Length: 125
Image 1 (spheres, rainbow, N blue to C red):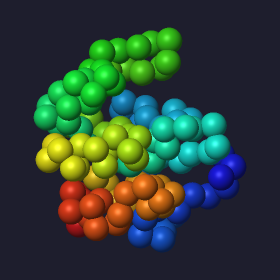
Image 2: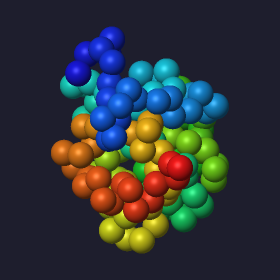
Image 3: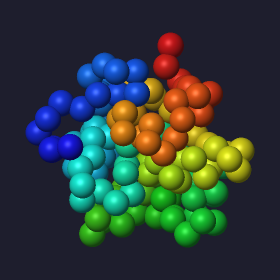
Image 4: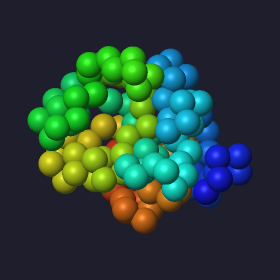
């Protein structure tokens, strides 16, 4: 998908913003949009927890430590962030998946993660 086209969420509506504090997204515009250069498919809008951050660190991806060279502030519990689809699925299967904002989760995730799995962790009302 081109960065300038409107993306849809997993519910079939226009993609909502995930977070601007901290600024998230593959394009660092607050949205979980993606394109062909995003090998990790950062399309799941999640509210991270300590359990998830520990799981991710143990799996080799420390999301707590700031990395300014990548415009990455480091995350703390309660922050919303565009996660890799595969990492969300791994965390779900391990019982420590974070909550998900379905309105801000890009629909291409459905190629990797079933909607039922995302809905099970939904914070949408």
